[in-house]
Length: 510
Image (cartoon, rainbow, N blue to C red; front, side, top):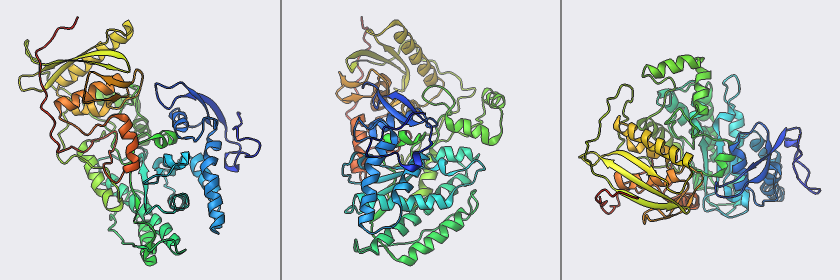
């Protein structure tokens, strides 16, 4: 067992003692060299990249040491304020169990316009399928106290839920079901009520003028026993207190390294739009759904071959329904598209071949210095029907994979797959080469070649201007009261007109 390098003057906090650790090499960005990180051996691989991106100093290799950098000042401020609660131990336990963690500014010691906390919902569920209601409430109240001590002047906080889809899968619930909507609303109500109580207690210490607390209507039923009653009880306690310190307390911020550190698969209340992960394997939520339902993998495969969906993959209408159910209890919500395009059933769909002579264009660009040519083929009505990718400077294997990938995308388009679903799946994928984009004035940065290709297609064939360059997306948390995207799902459509795409004559590239 490796020891966390906590230093001679900072012993390893007691919650981390006895935890089996291991050392891994990872990078916060695909274009950066790997760095060492020491994490619990049970944590997922993505947590290392999250820790490297969050820690205040590269010398803080261990997660416990990096956590002490922001927890120790919080504990000192609590003692100075006369708060008897052992906030340090509570925060270390929340992080150790991957239940919750604060937004990046607190880790790095930098002020934030909107301080936040992320709660990893599946980690509050035990092996018997019971949700730790008391532990969840205590965690929320500790988070409000932490953010208030770290940012005494902040009047807006963003405490948000994450990985709702995995929680639903472990409970064997379809994302689009009434039970799922009621559960999401009840959890949001419980979170908001505990946040109100914690903020009201701070107000009682004479910190701020105060904001009125109002109770919201709860769903009538919920698949988690006792959740509705608990939320109603906490609402009554909150409204009895009358006033709270903060103007707003709940919200879902754009995704970032905190989600990676906690091993979160889907951000916020995001819907699972595919049963496969980025590596082409079954996603964690899909495996959890099979385990919860007791359905063998062979049965699931047979159902897929028969054109059925054994996992309950969600559509955009389901996302909108969950969004509307949670919105009354969450002050800062991601926007969703008003017009939800229908999903196309793929099983047995006939192929719509392109005409022998078709329109399209060729786009030449470079991503991080790596040249590519993107050629498109269109149906007579202007719909995209095929793409070709040429990477002249890459290895033979890389060129072959790119060609096969483009063929697969083309076949999907010709069988009725919507382009926006490909965009949702591949925009902002991160792997090298990545970096500055040359040759395309509309896209300045790309996190991968696929990121560039699908954001370019989204701009030219879907007229989508809601996919900012990656650096802008990461900085959006500092201005989250404006536009807050919900990745990896639908992002808000913009009314701003885009200059009409020019369709040049098809060119042959040597």
